[in-house]
Length: 301
Image (cartoon, rainbow, N blue to C red; front, side, top):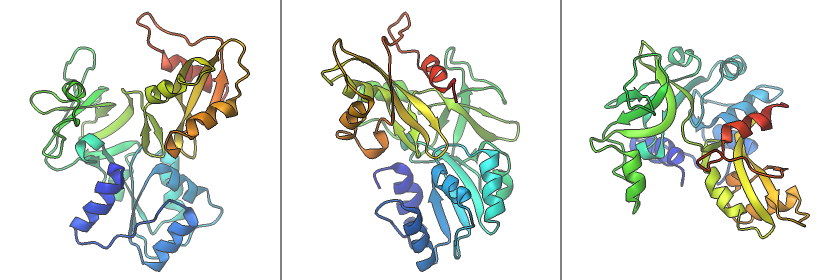
């Protein structure tokens, strides 16, 4: 319930429509299937890794009266959508796009036909204005041009709690929310999310700030420098990977690093891969060139 997707799109949203909801204490595939069948669930909001698990299962899973699933958190690939439809033809698959700052509202596909536009997050939600802006010049871009998505609507937040600076950098005076997502809108009004302008790691739909993990790791007495990047994973989307520079004389192991973090963060923020290096590259302004590190990390995949 602490995540806006579960709180808004699932719990309060469906309750507001007069629906009965079933809430699990945590996600486990067998328990989810039990609940779907025991309570005759017809609609299931989920995130892409759960769809991956359902498609990867050797045989079709028993889904009872389930008729619709709504996926959010990351775009679904053509292969995943078609694989799901082939294995579960009785279930309609929909997608949605939103942020915590927009109360999980932004765009959605509301039919199987709309979802067949592979890669799309759908059409804009009701009462939503959107524009694609060049993040460098501020120029409003035409259709099929990629830039940062800005949205405006009655559901957009008023600001971050007790953080005026963050609010000022995210919201314009006339109410536009800078999403931090690189997107384009096609000639028919469908939204496509290309990449994240911000550097958040997307783990099972959760957002993990690399800088937060870096700050934590730098408190370790044997770590001299560190950089955290998203590492692609088929099951969870991305997970945090750390490049670590040991202090002189240290014999710190990768397991030591991962356990240090795991004791202090939520499970979805755990570092799950560690590579030791002699130095962390920095650009002229002192920032870590994460894209270069991502290319290095994935070059052998």
